[in-house]
Image (cartoon, rainbow, N blue to C red; front, top):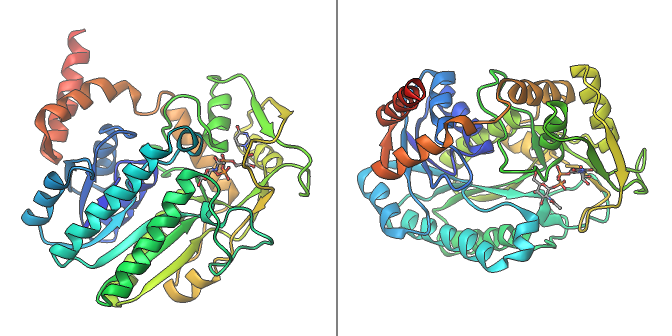
Length: 371
Ligand code: UD1
């Protein structure tokens, strides 16, 4: 059974890919590598010992995407591809609306045309805006506060309309809380471009000495110690949540929305302390002004996912910090060392399978040997 994962080379997508292969699914990744590195593909193969197909395609290019549907028997789609930087979305809203919305429309159009009606969609807790209370349940009011969040909300609404128009669809909308951590092998993990926006990658960059100190955004929130509280979830737990949601959409015809979180909130200072005690590394920080648009407290009521998907997060803060740090320590430059070479190889070949990935790797080694 072939599962198409859009954005399968990204941070969350790569971990989902591993879990899908481990669960015995055939995997096909579609990714344009705009915010990911092809080296991750080799790592996924190394972790799982399994092969899979990769197509370097931009979902905005409907013709290229259609080829994938024509040439393969796809059973279901897990749709993650999209732009995700909140700050950038405020500066360039049209880029976000065009990329996230149009690519989803292209994808769903082709799914309809080729009778693939099973979809798991990557949404975000950002759709709750500033919730009136916590824990946040799926039926809370929705009010995204920036263009990125609004694209997630609009796509959720589009999917509801698709389902209303044709009840043969089966759709699972997953609202992620704060995914951190990495695969325990240390082979794949979060690899943000430039200076990270999110807390954990920032902390690991400080720990490795690449950044001098962390700025803690806000110190007067009505929380345990005045700093912002979030529901951090290990990316492997999140990935397993996708497999559980996939199992459900394969069996039923319905549309459902699920929070994927742990139900446990940690403040920024609690995260720093946990990271320090697990790694033995001091994280210098400075208390500073709140970040525009940040909320005080956010954590999930994930009981619906537990009841209906039989899924719940298993890993705690120790594993999250330990695995994030192992990934950073083993890959101080992320996948970057391989980036330039492998990207150009992929551009040239257009379409890739795992053999050509190995070819990429061989070329990387060759070039390294001769320079
Ligand atoms: C952010 C996005 C959210 C997205 C999520 C994905 C914003 C405003 N929100 O959520 O839309 O779905 O990432 O993971 O960007 N913090 C610091 N110093 C830092 C970075 C963060 O103190 O350098 C604090 C924040 O104020 C917050 C907590 O750490 O209290 C977590 O921040 P972050 O990792 O950026 O996630 P969110 O803001 O919750």
